[in-house]
Image 1: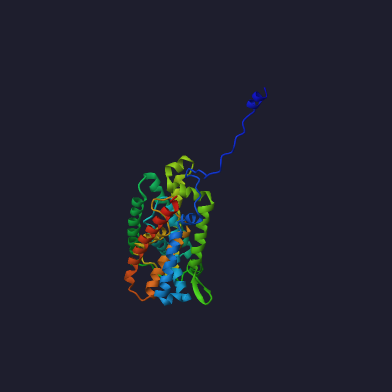
Image 2: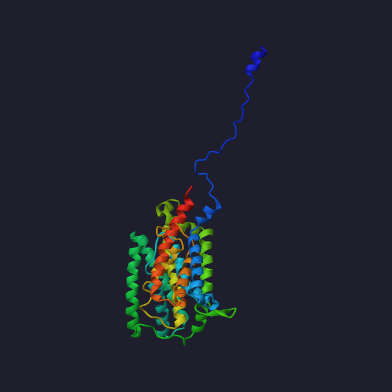
Length: 359
């Protein structure tokens, strides 16, 4: 009986010997280095450091504080527009009319104020409405027709280019607007859009401050708000985004309107810096803005990028543009440098993404 009782007792399970933990690949934790490389701005940051070091040796005048202030100014004018263009690209679209839209905004404010002898602030406000309207039109046409943004904004680009020239000649009898520096409100507007301030004996343009403020705001929107999630969602897959309740139409149109706001701001800076506007300018600038965003890590396919990356991308443009001058080289090589930078940035971003996603 005792042997039967012993047989009835439950057996004690012996824990298996510890061995290597099995994973299915989905729970693998990437190293901090790989997580850092996954950031879209890492590649352009390293590129910006390399460009700065190169010109510090190749162009000694760059080491001067005044020269660096000029470089930052050139970078800021590009960077202010590159930020909304980058947000639009993260949202899966791009705008070929951004360059001429800057000139349209400045022409509107200048001609309206001068021809109607109004306070320049009235022209500034109307120009803002026009710029936002152009952006809204681009976005509405895109979502209404389903056409690619390339075709929609190419059409807008051609329309604005023709209107800028034709209307300016019709109204002023010239290809440039009249000087508005003696009109009411000019000094106040200039202090907001085109003034300078002194730091350590060096004159710094106010656009540098606005550039950094807009970059911080764009970063906060992308990383900390629901709207930022919508931008990434519509850029990744708009049908999936719509299925989970993302307002795709609102997001797309508002992104184009942000580009319009950027065009207005840069247009006002140009107007109040030079007091007049050449109606044929702006052509080709849209490629500079797009290139700065691409160099900054934004993909043409959408759904990937940051606001910090285009800041470094615009800084690289400003550094190369002014660095060539300070080095005493032929400025005709500038576009060649930009092409090399663009191809290099695309290859670096591709390598960074593959490295960061490799298990």
